[in-house]
Image (cartoon, rainbow, N blue to C red; front, side, top):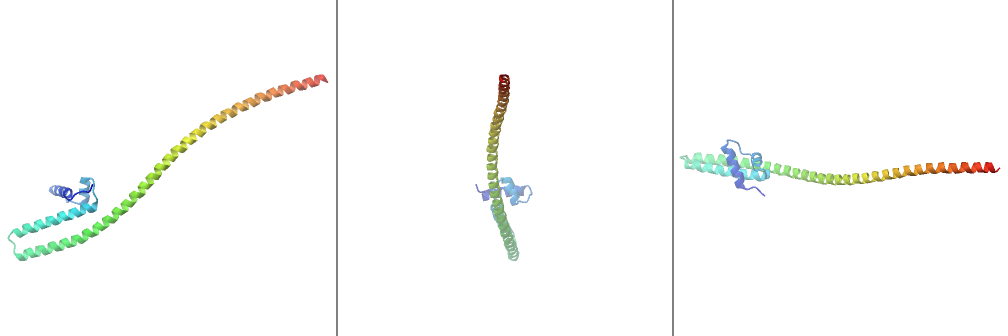
Length: 171
């Protein structure tokens, strides 16, 4: 949800009441959301409105038209210079926001890849565990077969010995 001008002005007035300069970062910190560009635009409007209110109060006082003209001229110059600086800053902020957005997209892609790798790793670990169990079973069976082969060799050796003895006895 976009932040509103009223929200920004409310925070700016609050900070001003505490004798704290209202900046975009302080207002964003207080609101907990919003882009710097939007906040800066609302702040600039607020400051412009404040400037107009000050001009109006000055006019209401007894001032000569020359002083009012000078004040208006200086105020307009200040606003013009401020607008250029504000536009320049807003452009820089917009560029930085795009860079951050691109980095966030890269980070999101990296996190997705990492999650996929974690899932793949878990599947691989499960497969390895199953294969380890199969290997243990095969090793057990191999051990049993080796025992059976030894038993059969002894039996065969015994039969051969008896056969040799009989052959020798018959001669």
